[in-house]
Length: 587
Ligand code: AGP
Image (tube, rainbow, N blue to C red; front, side, top):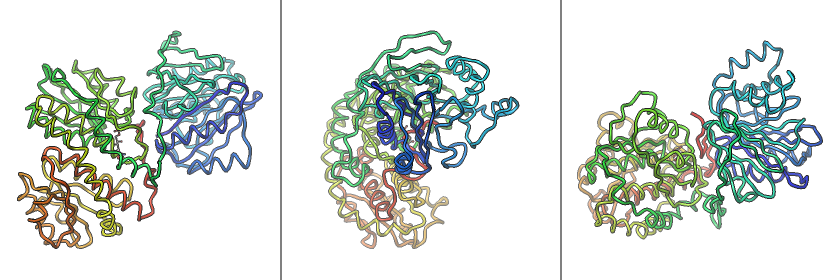
């Protein structure tokens, strides 16, 4: 979601081009408008534009904008439409401010400021913070006191960065629940994540909730929530955070799909998980959202079947609102690609408040908020994932979960080693999968069916298709079809079935027969034996034979390719699908 960047140029260098570069790096987070503000000779100026960054760049080229201290923002609209007028930075006479998060008490603050004679020109919650600062300055406060007073007044989540006309060499920042880092390099920087400022800074400080900092050319002053000055530890920017571009691929998503064998290999290598993770554990609770939640659903099958530990998987955004009970001896596992998802972070906060449970995180982004909030972290070694639709991070999450599930089972750990090569074989089916997209591209709805460990993969396949092609798609446990969803099947609805020759093959075969009796667009992903037994009227794609437990990893791949190809031929923006954000930092 929203991305923030700020740069203080060393030798009065104009930083606007560098701010734009940083905003380009933040694009993956998802946004629908953007803007930059600079302070120069005691004057603030800004330019903003709705839509993609190219619109902002065109405006800057047309109107000119320069300054050696500036802030930039990509906005993912929450309060107020994605218009230029609602784009950040918000600006008053003496302040320009950018914000990621939601100011929950904006109505009361707005009312109070209006009573004091201040007017508003946007539909955003953020504008109250800028106007509040202006009122405090008008009352004679210093910028520091104005900022302190504003922080004391706002409730909700925020990463703020502000510049002041009377303080032309400083960026003030603060964080609560939304991510923010301060970077040290030739130029001092701030950013929503370290990757955005990685070309400028080799070291960063990750701000904690309640932190406030004044960044100047000379260095940074950090303060805690009680405004006591504090020291913060600098962390080198991990090479893993720096994306290496699309290479020869048309899209990041395709590159990332193709990178899976290596991502899985590396993840296996770095995650030899000892049995001690399960010491004293009598329950497991998995918290995650979206694709990461689907990985958790697969793990539940593994954990209960092989570890014999009762496991719950919870949608993190729902979890803390139903006052759940956390039993003693629970191991909590948060799964997240970005490590920033606010729903998952908040769910962990609930866990901390209401139990002494051990918390482990499975994260892809090193040093991310969730990995820092956990007692133990297992990193998926998938490398930077830029495509909004998660692919390699998902299969790498499955690998870490498998390493936990089979930490007492050498036989399966050995079998896991074969998975990368099998994934290579699955990727080689891309040419065969491409024509299937023609069968789906005009559908108004598609159904994905699976059973057992492949049921969550049906959910994931459907999520991939809807995210990037905008075709409505749902995943179902195949046995549930007869309890309602079968009513949806007609000739126009593609039914995509996951049916390797496993213990439940006959059951799944019947579910397919029932679908075929009602629709004619049936696509089956199976293996050699399955293909020989399944009807020839359906389209069959034959995957390599794999141990049934690891089928979720393998069968994810053709579904990713199918979704990718469908979105491609529909002409959609595969890497940056509409309305979506890679990093979900608001509830
Ligand atoms: C995946 O394709 C999605 N874009 C989305 O569902 C994602 O998995 C979800 O937002 C959770 O993100 P996280 O793994 O970074 O926590």
